[in-house]
Image 1 (cartoon, helix red, strand yellow):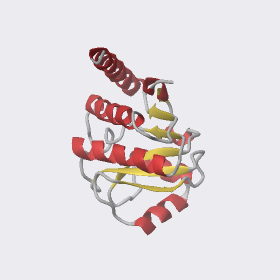
Image 2 (spheres, rainbow, N blue to C red; image 1 turned 90 degrees about the vertical axis):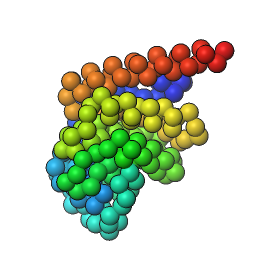
Image 3 (cartoon, rainbow, N blue to C red; image 1 turned 60 degrees about the vertical axis):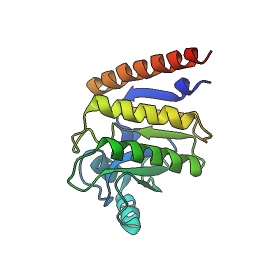
Image 4 (cartoon, rainbow, N blue to C red; image 1 turned 135 degrees about the horizontal axis):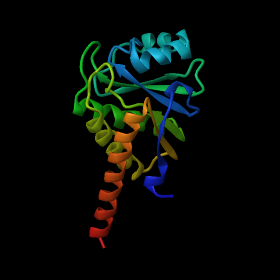
Length: 182
């Protein structure tokens, strides 16, 4: 199975995803307010926020893991791509995505599901989000990892269309890069 077969895009509700972990688009104070975090808080129950409170603040660009509470996912990995009430930046998104993947691999997880981190409340552009996150996932999968599948669960068809277009471009670039090496 190639790296490209391990990344799966779909439209749906991230909080309904059966995976070893789902990723929360988090602030660095790990306060589960609105957007994806709010949906995780509502469906997952209070234990997720309690675990976040026990962890406390983390640096922007990092991630932290908690249990999944009442979710189908066993864990939630909180990607701190912004400060509370702030905006997501490209470096913060790149670093927090990479950190989520490292945490998942260190924990021996096989499946992880991401939303389009930072594109809601934090106002990050969808296309740039897709480019950064998909490239980080490809880079991670090229190394040693426990992950067998990385899912992107997009909220609506428009977001899925953007991710699918960028994913096609990333795969074409990968094929060109592979061809250049021969």
